[in-house]
Length: 87
Image (cartoon, rainbow, N blue to C red):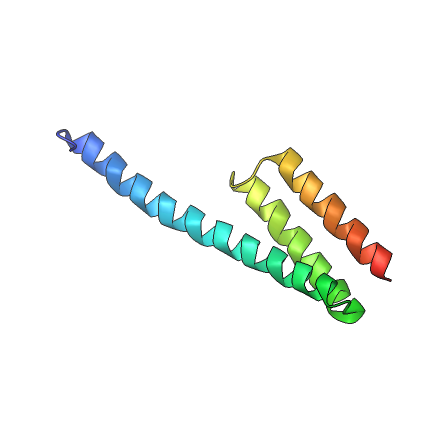
């Protein structure tokens, strides 16, 4: 348990940041799942429409420190490749 005023504040900040990170990570995972579902159903129109917002969310996640930039590059590369194969 935090005993100092600054430590108590740090606990509050960490809790708040944890909620924000969890929310952003959840949005990212949901968007990737939507795109993968569209790819799995061979829905060319939906997968094409979902690609740009998904890539955008991936880039935002990198800027917010939720995922590593190389992980983001890998996600974007693979998803783009799968969408291109479908078209």
